[in-house]
Amino acid sequence: MTKKQGDFAVRSSENTGNWKEMAYAGVLSFLRRRYSRDLNGVDVAVSGVPYDGAATNRSGSRFGPRAIRQASTELATLDSFPFGFNLYENLNIVDYGDCFVDPHHPETIINSIEKHAAEVILTGTKMLTFGGDHFVSYPLLKAHAKQYGPIALVQFDAHCDTWEDDGSAFDHGTMFSRAVNEGLIDTSKSTQIGLRTYNDKDYGFKVLTSPWVHKNGVDEVLNVIKSRSDTSPVYVSFDIDVLDPGFAPGTGTPVSGGLASWQVLEIIRGLGSLNLVGMDLVEVSPAYDHSEITALAAATIAHDWLCLLAQKNGAVPQKTTN
Image (tube, rainbow, N blue to C red; front, side, top):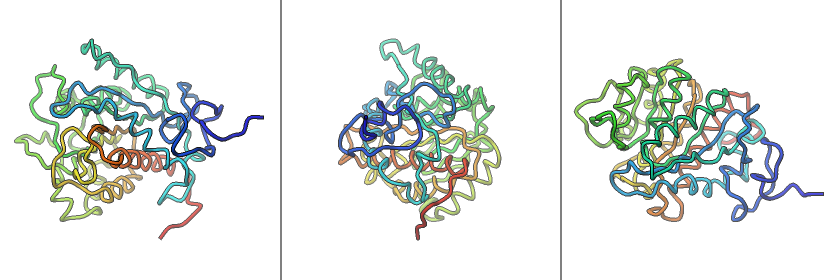
């Protein structure tokens, strides 16, 4: 009789629950979730988009999905903090694997990513996506907007990513201006958090710069996000460079003066009342990381977003924290 321990990702016949694993060994999937493309009854599909052909500075975020999966192994061993419940008993999650992108035929990239996302979203399954560079958010938003209509974007970033776009460039600094021009984003409902670069045009986003966050605090950030988003479908796009390089050195375009890990975790944990429809987490470049601290931050942020969905499913704390 097979013992239920080790390599849940490929040996389990069920999506929920978890087995005893060695944190330092075994098949890697995000949070040790089962690899599957059967979305029947699945709440969230986790997928990677290993594309970094739109980066303007340091490349390497194509290895981000693999690094985030590896950094998630310890998170998979315990009940979720500070939520106080077992995530894997309260949310049906699968690791959907990576989107296949062909870097030798860049003209296929956008359609490949959009089609990959649509296959998930059209089943009613939510999607948690790991980049890749931030350009991958554009085809992801195209897929989500077709399902939900114009999206309220909650963007965590050091950069606005709304510089002038010609409608055809592969540029991880212009894709949100393109998305606005195409009607994918409702900027009257959208908020950018952590910015510390300047652009003459804000496209209607509410911009909460990094200094503003430091001065006004987490609660005020949440008040702004919630008052703007209201009941609209909310898509969270999290560029890991919103964190100060001291907390996330492993990224392509680091900017000093960013947010601390505890700040972004508190903000993410406060978004549970919103109509969350999807999330991407991008720009983890492990070649520039130290001791996996960037990948670990990314894995924890993604894990906590999943916990918000588990709460919406009715998960309640079995343990209390002070």
